[in-house]
Length: 253
Ligand SMILES: C[S@@+](CC[C@H](N)C(=O)[O-])C[C@H]1O[C@@H](n2cnc3c(N)ncnc32)[C@H](O)[C@@H]1O
Ligand SMILES: Nc1nc2[nH]cc(C(=O)O)c2c(=O)[nH]1
Ligand code: SF4
Ligand SMILES: [Mg+2]
Image (cartoon, rainbow, N blue to C red; front, side, top):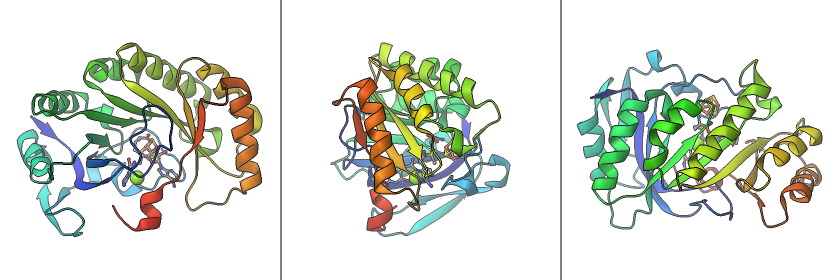
């Protein structure tokens, strides 16, 4: 089976804060799929969102060395799994599937998740959740899920409100399938408190929320805490947390 890959590397999970379902600080092998159907203005993986322009993928040869080898796309599933297994250091909490949007290539994603479970690994899915029909295909193989809600300021799509509703639906599907799931909201200084209140109403009783400032950070601490408080007032004080992209500060992948 073929898949359009971006990269495979070893790191620790740098996002997620301290809510249930987060794997923040855990060792992971990251499998980054090429291609995305959204266009978040602040996306830090822009070079991978047009799959047709990702002619080759890279895999790290040894953890934390920044040494890569390159292969042509499309990759075979077996070569991707080999690249993952050679990075297994015996302390791996879970395999992170990210992108781009991993669910867009749902057939190889599903096959790979099934294979990694057989090999004894847990699966961590990082997704925008905009495609609940595809989430349904992999929910039973997902141990952990981080589902983004795209704020209006991300300008991810013209159909922003319906995207949010689909993301909430994906969260519901993952929870019902037994995946430990949290929702991540990237915020900017332009994020409207009324929008955060809307997301919080939708998520209340469903899944915890982490609020993650867009990098590079431009939102003030005061604004950030105001958004936090609005969400916590609706969802409950134990169901909201902050998340930062810590890997960027520590200069790891
Ligand atoms: C590159 S995305 C890939 C997974 C999926 N497409 C998604 O958006 O959830 C991985 C994570 O990085 C976050 N992210 C990307 N660029 C960011 C930035 N500039 N600041 C903060 N978070 C960012 C996304 O919100 C998402 O949670
Ligand atoms: N260390 C590290 N943690 C991450 N958490 C989410 C990431 C992603 O790009 O999906 C990511 C990433 O690229 N590196
Ligand atoms: S959904 Fe994820 S990969 Fe796609 S543009 Fe937004 S942040 Fe980037
Ligand atoms: Mg990233």
